[in-house]
Amino acid sequence: MIEVKPAHDFGDMATMFAPKNPESSVCWCLSWRLGSKENRSLVGSQRAEKVRELCARDLAPGVLAYRDGEVAGWAGIAPRAELHPFANSRKIPHLDDLPVWSLWCIRVRPGFRKQGVTPALIEGAVDYARVNGAPVVESYPADNGGERVDLTMAFVGTRDMFERAGFEKAAETTSVVGGFPRILMRRTLT
Image (cartoon, rainbow, N blue to C red):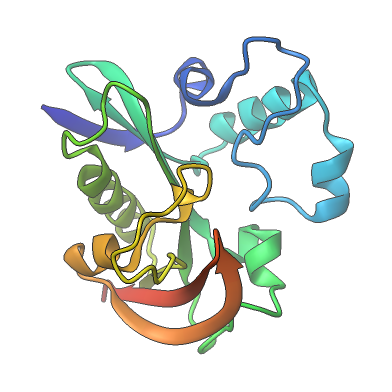
């Protein structure tokens, strides 16, 4: 069974993101949340501490999927206004003034792939946004036409995966990931 919960447990977040060497500067899914200056200034364990702060807030930084009680995956979901790169993007348009939430990252741990974790994460993220009053959830997946997406760039998801989850293409973007154009997809919640 797969259960999706708000990511308030820092230890479980560390299961998804912590490097073997705590002083390594890995993403921790902060690159799409922070402005570039702040993102570059946080190095090594400072990145983990920033995530610890985010987990302690009332509004979790995203959701975690659990399969049989074990951390299986992550989805980054938050109000777009909190996500500096999306709130200020010149490549991904704002379609209207709605307080949309952005679903920007999906990651499934090795050993849990191809077991239904991704659809559960998307649905769990959408549910979390709905419970917190979001009128619309946006995603910005690769429009890969069925071609394979390199695993290092697959965190954005694909058009097909979001269409299966009830999202519809809402706009083109000028953003590219892994050689594929990204599109703006939406799922209306109200």
